[in-house]
Amino acid sequence: MRELNIRQGKNSPEIILNPAGFIKIKGRSIHENVVEFLKPVEQWIDEYIENPADLTCVDITLEYFNSASARALIRLLQKITLVQLKHKKFVFNWYYESGDEDILERGEYFENILGVPFNFIRLD
Figure 1 (cartoon, rainbow, N blue to C red):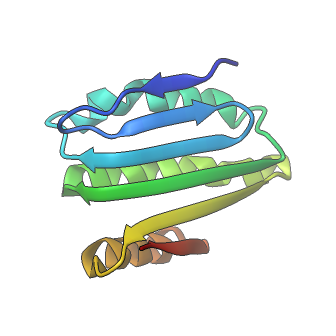
Figure 2 (cartoon, helix red, strand yellow):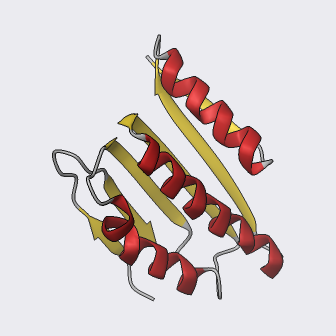
């Protein structure tokens, strides 16, 4: 399996998918067609969960995202939790700027919807 790198755009986040178990999503996600944009990411994750690393670490640092991006991100994170079926572990790290209560609350909402623990890490 190969690493997948998607460069950050004006309306889309940087995404790094590494088969060694590292996933990074960083930036803004207000892409007009987020489903189409994330199609290669979903395909990569579908393949990855067939033979995941012992630990999958997902780092999410989003400064802003729209509701369509939120739905797509929840779907991606749900897929990643499937590594448990292979007796592997995952960690979701949600980074937020100090004072950005909106992004923190969105992360807490994701944690609640997915029913899995998140690590909330404040950036100073």
